[in-house]
Amino acid sequence: MTPLNIISLMVENKPGVLFNISNNFRRKGFNIHSITAIAGEDADTTRITITVRGDAHEVTKLVEQVEKMVDVIRVKRLDPLRTVQRDLALVKLSTADPMAQEEALETINRYKGQILDIKPDTIIAEVTGSVDEVSEFMRDVKHIGIVEAARTGITAIEKGWITLEGNG
Image 1 (cartoon, helix red, strand yellow):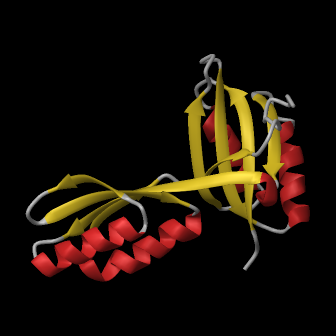
Image 2: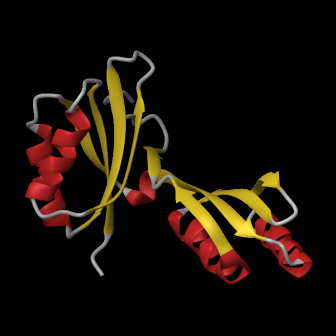
């Protein structure tokens, strides 16, 4: 399997920018594995984190292409060794059976998750960690009964004084 690449972008906060960027990925033959976006502190910019699978050469060409887009302020392929990355999952589990509820609570605790809602027949948990940790949690609770789940996808930031804006 080709490696997962994390691409971080700072773009102008305008309608259609996210569509144009994701469409560029599509045109280049990349399937987006995950995408997160948040308006910047100044409200004029948006920070986007996109993960794609591909070899280094292909991804480098993609980054160069995206960098030329009008609304893109900065784009960078993040080095996984210098990057803190997290994924978050909200998971609703079926716990009508008391044994299932006990096992769910133990599993959530083992992954240092938080219980956001507990009812007689369901529990909603929040689990945050690396993509692998969150995926492992999902596998561990599957047999309990996942009623519904939502994941954020990877969000990432480089360690130290290195910033997407180029400071440091």
